[in-house]
Amino acid sequence: MDKLNIVGGGQLNGVIPISGAKNAALPLMCLALLTDDKLILDGWPDLADTQSMRELLASLNVESTMQDDALHMQINGQIGIEASYDIVRKMRASILVLGPLLARMGAARVSLPGGCAIGTRPVDLHIMVMEKLGATITLEDGYVLAEAKQGLIGNRITFPMVSVGATENALMAAVLAKGQTILEHAAKEPEITDLAECLIAMGAHITGHGTDTIIIDGVDRLGGTDHRVVPDRIEAGTFAIAAALTGGEVTLQHARPEHLSALTTLLIQSGASVTAGDDHMIVAGHGRPKPVDVTTAPYPDFPTDLQAQFMALMVMADGVSHVDETIFENRFMHVPELMRMGANISVSGGSATIQGVDGLIGAPVMATDLRASVSLVLGGLVASGTTTVQRIYHLDRGYYRLEEKLNACGANITRVRE
Ligand code: EPZ
Image (cartoon, rainbow, N blue to C red; front, side, top):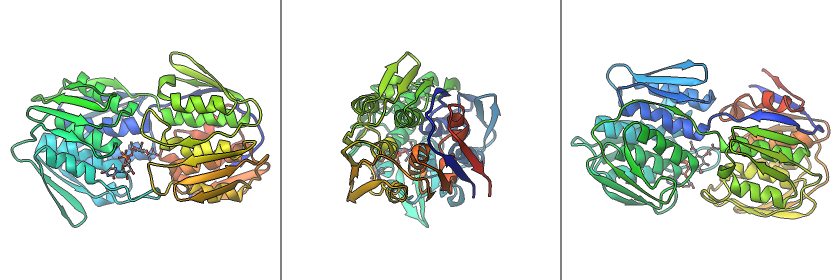
């Protein structure tokens, strides 16, 4: 398994191009199931997770080819309706084929994704959505068996809690349902808005996306389109924190400042400066960060996917800060690894208290999940000596050429292939 050796100490200065969002690309790719025409995704991020989705869709007879930075996708032959365990277990967002398959084929057999390091990750809300739209669901041998022989029927669906994936599955199912669907307490993440905008370009009738009430009027068919994937706000936020942490100045090219307002507010409170442009952000660190408390919550509040990275910043603050993780039940696995580097953190349930230290010491650390891994890389950037991050396949799931982008701004990171 590959590892990264990081020699700490330098500031980050320069320009980082932000790639298309992983968490937008994954549902967008599933839209290829909803039309016989070609779907083109410009700015598609070539990552382990998006390649797994390509593999899953190929098993359902969706052909795809990469042309420059675009993925061209089109159904070739009879659409398959089974998403097998051996693919789904590698990438739990595979559950997102459930809605499109039911909408298009009236049937689906999708393996339950199972949990992952950060939590049990249930899919009960995805199942609730499909039943509300008229599907019959049974669970058998670890698979979700779904049927809607007469097609899906629009309905009012109220989510008991905000769920990004379940909102996406509901959108992709309702666009071809008979009649109107109203989603209440829907997720408002930019990735939802991007998915809705692509669906509208394909001929769907959707309003209210980006708010907590989305209205979909079903249509008979959808056509293809050429859609640019929204820039990755979590990648951009990760590098913004890296700039604040190392004291340099970094321009995040293509970043959408309006997607990072919760982070921007806290970065400024911590003493960093943030300048917003139309399609870029400039972030600069100015010495030791000030302590800032953070609580994760659904968009537009502070994203859980930036919690571990922000904690790496607070580890170096000149005072005590608190991090409350409210979305996932086990998203502090970066804590023991940061403590191996000299961080002073105590955890009680979903709350962490960080006593800032004035330096970290490089050490061998273990990546456990995607965002925990990158928080260890951030710690390594400012630690004295060398930090070795092992099992970086976790990183490769969600960051495109991470070490190249950081080294181009002055970092000293080498990938060791084992
Ligand atoms: C998406 O996961 C993202 N993944 C996650 O990013 C992100 O952390 C999460 O949204 C929250 O923003 C993708 O988009 C591929 P949820 P998702 O449904 O859709 C509970 C990363 O690092 N829940 O909004 O799975 C769930 O357990 C990944 O890029 C149910 O109880 O998240 C969690 O506590 C990690 N039942 C909460 O809702 C369900 O049926 C929010 O989950 C579904 C979810």
